[in-house]
Length: 237
Image (cartoon, rainbow, N blue to C red; front, side):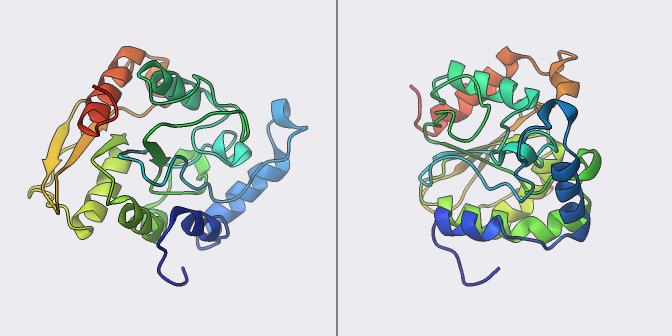
């Protein structure tokens, strides 16, 4: 990464040019060339996927990594797959998104006070980035948190991978992460002191099909966490 980044637009512009992880670069580009049969007429994005949402968001949602035929195809977080369908329907239900669907860039979707990002920005094979790939990608998350910090009041982490990835980033950014570090769990809520006001950290099962199809994560469960986080972020009453 070049000079220190001070705005989201500059961060996103640099991020989408990243080629730091050879395995991820090869995979994302192979998927973009070979495509899934149902998307054979589409041009895949095939690059790192930047965060999505306003630069003054007070609520941040942190996932895992782009899906091979979802965000790696469309170029926008959680867009074009069933995980995104589940997430955006819940965001819309609690008043944080302009519509319940996310199909492609330019579909009219807008987030209200919410930004979505991930600790790894390229689609990994089998949806499993390595610890080394997570660590290589971390500086993007460091920069994003630094830019968002003046407005940020709550964070929802989808899944244990994101939780473990984010805690050291929050610690280094100046929020006081307790020792021992809090464990991930659905409905976990930790208040982290730091700066002018605390940051509220929430845990939520990931919106993967493995969780949503089996009922481990229901729409009501997700909407409950979203509502709690949005309330402390000042986005809903």
